[in-house]
Length: 240
Ligand code: BTN
Image (cartoon, rainbow, N blue to C red; front, side):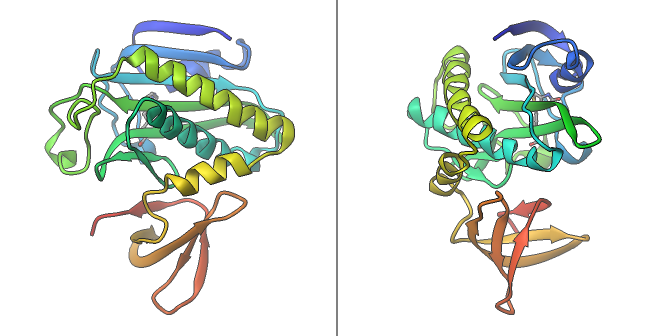
């Protein structure tokens, strides 16, 4: 397994996509800072030097493209387990945010390169706020860093623990079709199962109760009218 360590880059995810076809699966790209860090839904991800872990993992699983979203859950479960191993109480806001004390400390952005029914590679981008103190006004109420929440951890330890946990869950899923270990962690550390959340769909916001995460990694919710729905992606908000 190869680690590429950069001082600066636009986005580790974009860099990963540039080299994705040339490197072997398991290549990890880490940058001290990103000048064009990307979040989901076209958002900007602030990635100042030394403030956090900005990394992208390139993997080359032999799976059909529709199975790739599950890898986001594998990554999220690995982050939460890694943090738990280091004494941090974190939880997963399905499908790709990691929460500490009700605020987001980590986001995951998975990108896929596929042709026809074949995956070329998957880029799993992970941003973990470690030392960030000042967040922009728009996200001040919702974002935090490990340091702000009272945790002083080394970035190397977190990356190492993440790699150990990811390798276990990833191999289990790809080689043995074992989804259960990932799903169990996603349920155990869920920030939303059993709670009310807002689901944003077609620009509409609806209050629902989260029931479970099913075998496919989809969220099962109960609507106000009692109807049970399966949600594949989309935005889930814990705030009003
Ligand atoms: C989100 O919560 O919206 C996802 C954030 C993902 C941020 C990481 S930082 C490393 C990698 N490179 C990027 O440009 N984005 C991801």
